Amino acid sequence: MSDNDPFEGLDVPDDPTSDLDRATQTLTVRTDERRYGKKMVVVEGFEGDSDLQSLASDLKSALGTGGTVKENHIELQGDHAGRVQELLRDRGYNVES
Image (cartoon, rainbow, N blue to C red; front, side, top):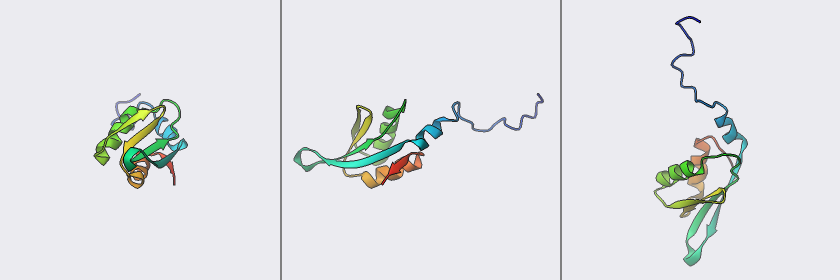
């Protein structure tokens, strides 16, 4: 192999199929109403070994809201369904409208 590797310096992830896992999942985003009329956005449909804690943290930071991960779904406080769909699509997920 020569010193002029054409692939050197490219930003190739350790697991190039990880993006493929995201694109094959179809997530659903719905809004629930909790006690006292408070809205909660629920993101469901995650399969496999998704890093839900990291994704939830990113979404909470982007929205400036609280939330949690429970039983393979993400719950976010507030009525942010449209914005959550947009953020998930930007991260490569397929979101059902």
